[in-house]
Length: 444
Image (cartoon, rainbow, N blue to C red):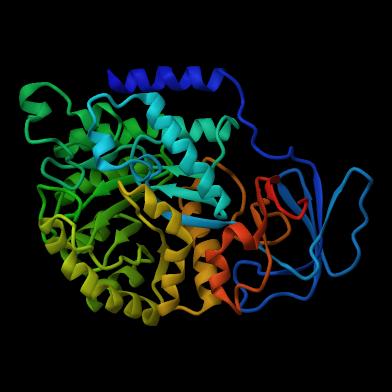
């Protein structure tokens, strides 16, 4: 019932009027810019880049002729680069605290206002696309796509799919099993998760998400640090259950990504046909070899030290993950594993402001140019794994002719000084998504 109210409220929100969402699409010429194209280890010579509609039409070091209706932006040697991509966000869960999520009086209007604020700030930090790795995302994505809310492009997973007692079993102690007692949990009603056991239920949950527009499916394959009932070491979902989700996703031309830390969970997921592992900070060399051999994506985060006031049980769960993650990053780099990057902030809205700074932490193992490549070209390749289920057709993560015009004009050279990326307010002078300019401080 709560989900129904949520959708009704959103429809009212969508019909109530349009929030201003940047200058309209047109023809834009970036003059005399140095380009980071998403893959190179250095910037180009000063070039001119012509945008028509939502597409990069022409790139040339020679003069490009334009008509009087073209917006000309004097680059003066600034850096033009692709918009950044965060491959693991939770737009709803990252915008509210756990106390707010559990509040009995939680309203759809409150959720939308919080998410709207965070989505706009994310775009203003230079993140023009994200992969939402689980939660009630479809109405939020619709609002952004219709221009009712400012925010990045979203590749939605929909509700996470979890076994009973799995990482997505968010029931409170007084909530009993839907299967035995007939009532869905609050998290299920809210669209946060499906608690699905057995092949048939996993198939139904997967297809339900695909029906609503999921671009990929998120399955919980192992224990987690923020969930109460599952130790980190446990493996979740049998091979047959996991294979059911993979088959249903493949029938729709897309893939399954799994939450998993341990070698056992990851190896089972790969055997079942999963194409992406989210987390993996407890993996060993043998597991990474299997990831590499099977051309699997490893979508990782850089977790920071636990705070002293953290719940003791969660602190204990996080300890081995924190300790082992440098080894996994180092091995993945050395072995040439396909690595994606994301933040995975949950229930701590203040952390969202540190999104850019968390990207800088990858610089411990990768050069600045490699970090930028991961956050643009490489993450875009992971998004493209959704195939025809991708909600936005076109090439992202690169500055090349024919690519979509998701672009940042940066005051400085982030390959020489990566810290510029963590100064979006001052250094990102223009932010463009889909050919629309959302920020232009050169006009000021």
